[in-house]
Length: 311
Ligand SMILES: Cc1cc2nc3c(=O)[nH]c(=O)nc-3n(C[C@H](O)[C@H](O)[C@H](O)COP(=O)(O)O)c2cc1C
Image 1 (cartoon, rainbow, N blue to C red):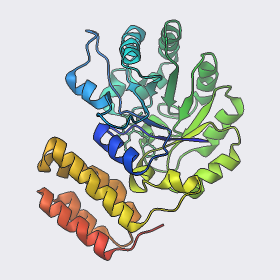
Image 2 (cartoon, helix red, strand yellow):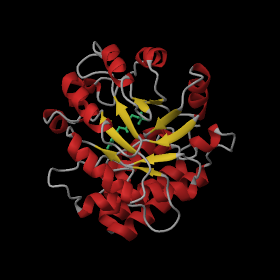
Image 3 (spheres, helix red, strand yellow):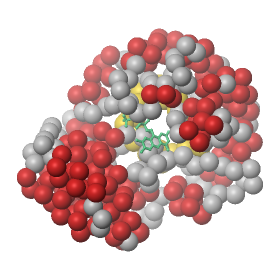
């Protein structure tokens, strides 16, 4: 079973991907946070910085596009192909209110004719394999079976399912029964995404769904960067490795964006990392309220020195 790093806006940008890949090789693909191609068919420099791997070791990267327009998708896909990317992912899951209001991301799940038209447009002109990342519905999962049938009509390279509705955002129990239904009915290579927090869970998914092509891991892999190594039989994460990863991320962010910006980025990382430590709340809350990098690094040091790691 392949293992992917999930796209996470504000977290898994190129600096993060490079540090993770250098320190914990073995993740099969890193999906970029979404790019939204515009009608004027030009990538903003900021978009290009998000997708281009930095110099050095090439990180296996798949760019993700957020759009409801087939021509815009196909334009962006052509550009990405000429840059050397080998797959493009379509976002049909983003739950943000502004995105949904524009009928993009999980907004497409509430308008099946529109989603059909988009997929028809994309698959009549694509030159790269196109994978899709989806939720199971907009407000509820009433249309899930119809959605599975709709996806089945297209040569989607891989379908990643986050088994929650748009309304459920990223919280609460996932609906594994909805994934199981898709596993039974879909003819596409499937990828499971959502609340994977251990190598044991990866093994459980692999044995429950024998034909599962891949798992995509987000917050759990930010918190335990060695999860895929452990799943493949390597050693579990140690506290000193976690510390080294933390310090390498901070150093890379500070070098690229300056200390203040690095502090903000590390706060996002700590939202995930704090789940790795027992009884760290009082220090982790101080990290969230830190006003400068020195303060953040001080409280981070306290956690590493005083709190036990949960593994
Ligand atoms: C801060 C944040 C940003 C995200 N950005 C994206 C994104 O750009 N594209 C996308 O498809 N999903 C995005 N997601 C969703 C994740 O890819 C993933 O589906 C979600 O976190 C559930 O997986 P997990 O439980 O393993 O974290 C984001 C999630 C979070 C928490």
